[in-house]
Length: 355
Image (cartoon, rainbow, N blue to C red):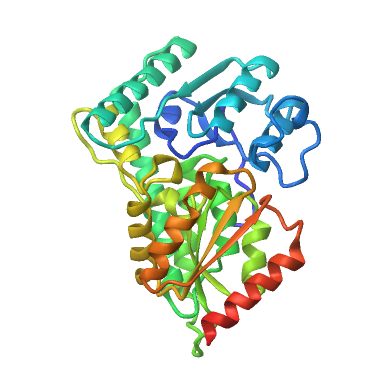
C-alpha cells in the first residue's frame, strides 16, 4: 500500500476519535483526519496559548497558512481545553463553510449515552442544514457497514503481529492507518484485503525474533517516524493503545432500529481515552491486549502539555506495574527532537526487559 489512494470527493475534517465518521460519510463527504505537522510550530503562539501541545499548535500553523482550505468543513470535539481553544481560533481566523463542535459527556452511563445520542442528532441536523438534503437511514446503514468492514480488516491485519516475529511492522501498519484517515474507505478496504492475502501467502520465517514485544500507549501520535524509530532500536512494537493506532479500530457498531443510538453507544463505550477519566478501564484494556499480543513491556508516551494524559501517568503506571508490566514513560513534542536522550532511555528499557 505504498501509493496513496486519491481523494475524489468533498471532505470534512475531524480531529478527535470520538467524531462519528459514519455520519460525515453518510452526508456525502469524505472524513479527513486533521493531523497538523511534525515540525516546530512557527506562527501558532500568535493565535493560541504557548502551553498547548505540538499537535494543536501545528494544526493552527497549517490552518492559518491555508493548508486546510480544501475542506468543506471541520468537526471539533470538546475533548480537552486545547481542542476547545483550537475551535475558537479556527472559527475566528480560518474561513470555513461548516464548523461544528460535539460536546462529549464524561461517563458512559444511561444519562451520558442519551446526551451523546442527542449530540449526534444535532450533528446530523447541522449536516443536513448545510447540504440542504436529508441523511437517509440507508445512507447511515451503508456508512456503518463500510466502516465496520474497515475495522474488521484492520484487526485482521493487526492480528498478524501476534506472530513471532510479527508478520507486519508497526511502521508499515501506521502508514496504512494514516491512509485510512484520508481516503475513500471502500478503496482502502479493497487494498487492505489484498495486502492481507499477500502477507499470508508469503513463506513463514523459520527463526523466531527474540526482540522484546512492546505496547505503546498515550497521547495521539501522528508521527510515523517516531514509531519506526522505536522499531529501529530493536523492539517489536505489536500494539498501539492510541487513538491514532490500534485502539481507534477496537469497536464495532451494531445494527438496530435506531442507528444514531447505535453510533453514539458504540463511540461512548469504546476503550476510553484519558479525557474520560476511567483509568481502571484503560488499564484493564492495556493489560488484556498485553496478554493477547504477548507483550513484554509498555512504553507510555505523552505529548508535552497534554494535561489529560500527563495527569493519568502515575496511577496508570502503578496499576500496570502491579500486574507485571514494566513501564517506560516518555514525554516529547511528538517528533524526534531530543533523539539521543530518547534512544538512550528506550535502549536501557529494552535491556531491562531482556534481563
